[in-house]
Length: 194
Ligand SMILES: [Zn+2]
Image (cartoon, rainbow, N blue to C red):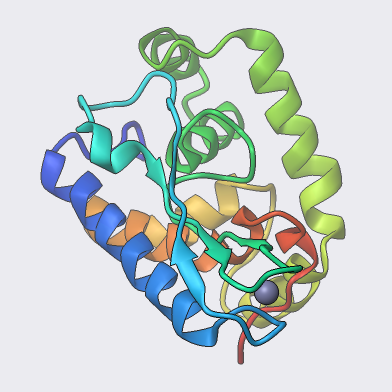
């Protein structure tokens, strides 16, 4: 059912636009010290992307405080990158979900295309099975979902919940947005906004 990621470049540039919005919110919030945030993006080299991403879209949007003595880096949530992982969040979610879904056979094909090895996938499984459910993010967000979504396994149940009733572009965007609070350093501790 959920065999693939959207291939069209428009989807990936839309995700970038969502990240720009998230970055703008962070910039307006300023540094916790009260200093102004200056643009300090850095280039990432995501592995095995489904479409050839222009270099600008490989940027992790980020800021640096301009106040002397602080100079703290502030990196907003992202719908494209999950923490320090080099793969795009969508690939990590899709491949992990498909291992649990009704068609695990396709996993080999996908992991070849996205150049993900078995050890990496095994680490992702541990992340979803052991770490993710323990996060304060999931304790709150999961509790809000469970009245409507039956969580059998993660992340398959999430993919199913978000993509079942929507076209892939829309479903993926909503799912990545939902998970975006966990994409920042220390973000696994961040609570979902009400
Ligand atoms: Zn500061």
